[in-house]
Structure formats: C-alpha cells, structure tokens
Length: 287
Image (cartoon, rainbow, N blue to C red; front, side, top):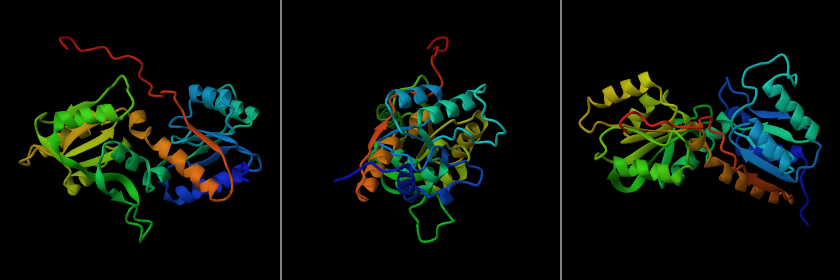
C-alpha cells in the first residue's frame, strides 16, 4: 500500500526531473524553507510565490508549495516579517508548508517549461533553441524550443491559436509582422526571451513566441527581419506568467508518477490563482 512521502523523498524526485546543476549561475533554485523529515501529502504548483498563492497553499492544506520563480533571487540579510518576502517565509514556516523553486533548471529540462508551451501550440519535432552545453550527450536539453506546425497558417491565425491556448491576461497577445504572412516553423521561449534573437534567426523560425519583449530588442529584430525576403521571424509577445503556466500540469503529473514508482502517493494540484501583475487594459484612442 502506497504511503505519503517525506519532503526529502519529494526533493529527490524533483532533482531527478530537473537537476539543480542545469540552472543558470545567477539563479536561486532548490528548497527555500521546509523540514526534509516532514510528511508531504499535498503539493500546490504555481508560477509565482506571491501572497495570493501562499494564501491558496495554506487554505488548501498544502505541505509543499512548488514554484517556478524564485522568492529570493538576490541575496538578502534578513527575512524579517516586516518585509513582504520575509512575511511569506514566516507564514509558510509557521504553517508547516515547505517552499521549493524549479526555475532555469526547469527551463532547460526535457520536458520543461518551453516544451509545455510548444505542446499547447501543437508544435512537433521539437529541438532546443539554445542547447545546454554543460550536458554532452543530452541534445534534448536547453533553453527554448523550435518546432513545426502541422501545416502553414497565417500569422494572424497563429496568433489566435496562441491566444486560445494560453490563460487569459489583460495584455492578451501582441503581434509584430504581416498578418497574412504564412508561418510554420516556430520558436518559443517561456518567460523573457528577447536575449535569444540570434538563436531564433539561426533556427530559421518563421515566428518567435515569448514574453516581455522590450521595445529596442523587438524593434531591432524586426528591422533585421525586414532585410530578408520573408520578413521572418515575426514576433508574438504574451504575458510572462501565461507563457510558463502550461508547464505546471505536466510537472505535477511527473512528480506524482515519480513518487508512485517509489511506492509513495501524493496529491499534486495546479494553482488556479492568476498571478500576472496587470489588472486592467485601457484601449488606445480610436481602438
């Protein structure tokens, strides 16, 4: 009969799914707080460790909050409850709920964050946009993904595909390029991806789907694209949270399966709290 694991066993399964060594040097992944000896019966998965998500975790009786974004990305000298982040740490510890982060190590994993984004867009034949050089012999690992649609489609129709596949946000989906241009080869990067334009061009992608596109990198990318006959890559910009949210369900399933292989059982649930920070969109004049 399967029994609930202790936190240490859950962490072993998570480490096997996306080892900490796959994280970028600047990142802060792993266990933030929690007792490895405590039993874990319920896990809540979310993108952001914000107060509303902590509320959801504690209200649901979660023993572990597994998030994508670090709570403490930069070094701190205090987690006093007088600060917003310190308050969350205190609340979690007092409730006996651990906090664990899988960030760029989950980005690089296969399946990982960008795999999930690619799959909800129906892309196939996936390869990393930027392979993980530190893992020879594992060509499937790396940041971003490049894949193909079943058939070419208009950029405008593809943008609608993106809008339908991802959770709704006030930003919606922004597009740069000819709406009637045909696209089939697609590059994606969950989260902020405008540092990857060189890799996107090298991949031969017709369109790049990512988040947080800044004015100057996006403008320069489109000016460079205009030099080519096809005007590619076209750009599709979505909300950061929305681009990474699809990863949560697959991660939950893999965690449950990994623990079941050890004779352990746990409930894993995806947060229903929308943590995109933008709450209102006012249409431009004349829109």
